[in-house]
Length: 290
Image (cartoon, helix red, strand yellow):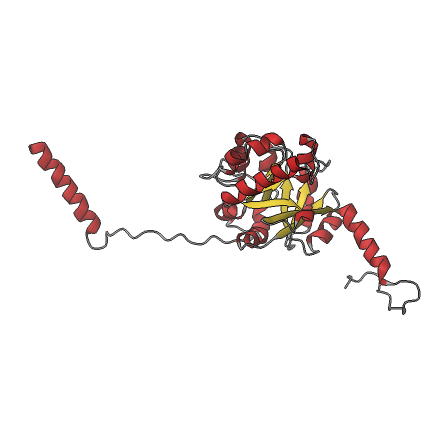
């Protein structure tokens, strides 16, 4: 009986302590984190975003693309000889540009993702995700604790994104998972269940490469449909090539590379002054184009 009385006394004291004046527990209100990743902000608002693809290490080409109106740049480090030193120089040369720097890393390893985030990428694109473990690794190395296991070290991220980078990085980082194989399609449900994924990208070329089917084939379209349905059911944004911009549900798009853009730009330029057209005033060398 004495034991019960003691327990009751302790419980009463605890209740009185918490309801005493000045001790009432007021739920903490979460302070909104500063968002500087404008591509992520647009995506969260339900808008479509497009990123051109960068293969060249030339900072001038990078800056021309970063200021051309794209929401982000898909910096290609899986299928190019670009080094992290090259990309760090490019991002720094065009700091403050409207297009956000996203990097497709070679793999979901700590080394690749750590270097990419340290040099200032605010989007990590991971290719060929077949198994749930790779999707988990992508989030793990992209985010600081407690959401992930990214370590804190030196890098140009602070100079690019501000002194509060450590407090804001997780909210601004975008993790993009690419499903490119029939195995990945089969495991789409498990992959989409991983917390921290922002976009699942249906890789148009490699879905055909690994399956042996072409776009328009029933088997191919069934894979795309499965990725589409599972991704949207989990509240994740859906990505694909820019040619799929008209497909329902897709909001994240990879645009062309610089060679295609130069070719397209040249065609537009050549069409400006056809033979017999009224002469125009030539631009002054050294001035910015209008």
